[in-house]
Image 1: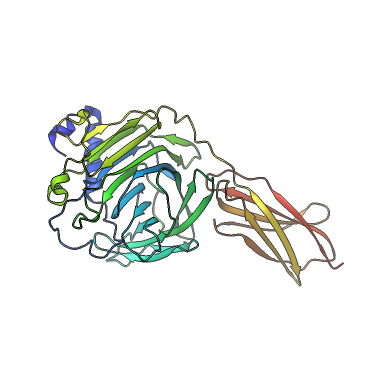
Image 2 (image 1 turned 120 degrees about the vertical axis):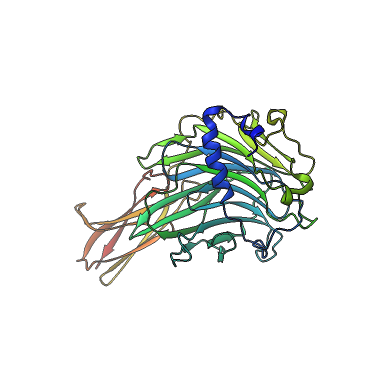
Length: 399
């Protein structure tokens, strides 16, 4: 960052800004389209820009809302850039997904050269999976989500550990309908910590060489309600917010190098980023490329959340085997784990299956039961560690 940009920030934040600049400089380019790893060419890309949110401690879950009001092809609206990966919404000229408006989640390999890879643990319905490379390597998932302009979306990520693996699942909620969708779970070998303390939302026009989607088009998005859930199950608010438009990218940005802006919009109670076209930086930037941002006025002390809920439960019994199947309410917080219990006629629990697996909706319990009346009980815990109301279903054996 230029000296003039640093002078726009409080002295106490300069060290944090420098750390974040280093982080941003080493962030890996999305490779949805072929050729992203090619040598630099003459471009006119809208300048990449970031809002860095600083939190006090590591997180097992992160949530952040986005509303896109202006877009064009070759644009990445990243909502979460966390330790080891990122996710968000893209508009792509790639025709392979049936829509330009996709949902992407990526996790880098811890050590590709050492053959320590990330992997896809679960792809959601219609989600594409593939390796990416160029600047860093790993696995990505793309879902043809068909996000819409002027609509708020809530994107959540949840991490957990099991059998030597760190799992990171991505969920999205359409705030207009309330419906959640689990797009994928990615994983890598276990390491200390979870998702990290910081979060980076950014706008990137990843290809400025084509006049059909270069920096001449204005892109704009709003962001609000950025939260971390810490390892003690306490919601944390961000303590600092810094906006930076990448410096040193004049060759890539061409005539759009100063086509950026950001700030806080009181009417939306949200931060915004805009770049491309005739966008001009606010006078607060002076000749610099970075500013600090105020606290979100109405964020509150904790996010407003629904609690995960089981909608239906069916139970079947065959010789020495019980199968319980359930559905969850898609408008409630998504499932993280489930517990299935079998109770006898006196109410004593005689069998239990308990597993952390968001996509799990059935369980088979091997149990030779004598004739009698029994109850299957299913309890789910959602991705925000809230325990839903138990749902029970009676069944009869041998009558």
